[in-house]
Length: 308
Image (cartoon, rainbow, N blue to C red; front, side, top):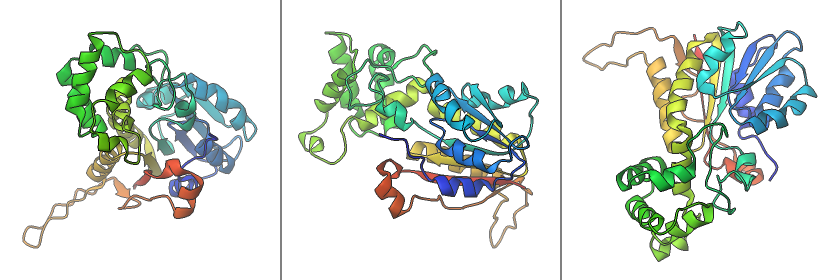
């Protein structure tokens, strides 16, 4: 499936891009958002730094960006390291950062990466192929309690206990090595009526394992706080999330940074003179037109914050 950037216009507009500014795309992917941002920057004056921990994304996006401008730098690293990596280029302040979280369409559609329950592949799910923890290792080495907690919390899966129990039971007979083996276990763990409902029964468990393998929530907390700390006054951060766990983290961090204390009728608050303000108090959602063109945008939410 061709990659279609989600909430593209809303994100670029929300960043309030300056032609001579310094910007960061923390999740380059296949350069959908980066291309639109780079077109606004004045060649040789503004600059875009692009991060991705997936080397395939870096390689495939370079040519696309070079057709637009040379005012960009590609950085093969996790965005939780954006402050230290930018300092290597003598950059300690930026005018905007954008995050498009989760797995890219290209990663989902690559049958060899193990992200999707639609393809039979080795259980991998690593966004960075150089890291050691794989989905196969998680499924075959985590004990029952750890598996159940992970699937319940990261996947918000109501049948987490039964799925974890059956994973542990199956692996005593044979090591679980492929996505379809895991899908079969999941299907055998949920009630028959669930199998006939809309949506794949393995979706939430696969999400949970992927989040664990890539430490997605921990990385988000650390990376987002670092991004906020290097913003210039007037600079903005735009974050697109795709599930409630991500969105809750972004919402809480943004609220913490921008909260000036509301007080009450009886107890006046002490204003903290917050350094940040919320650009949108409620998340921006895809339009009905976008959802028709790109069904993968269905769960997307965009939140934006600005440094005063």
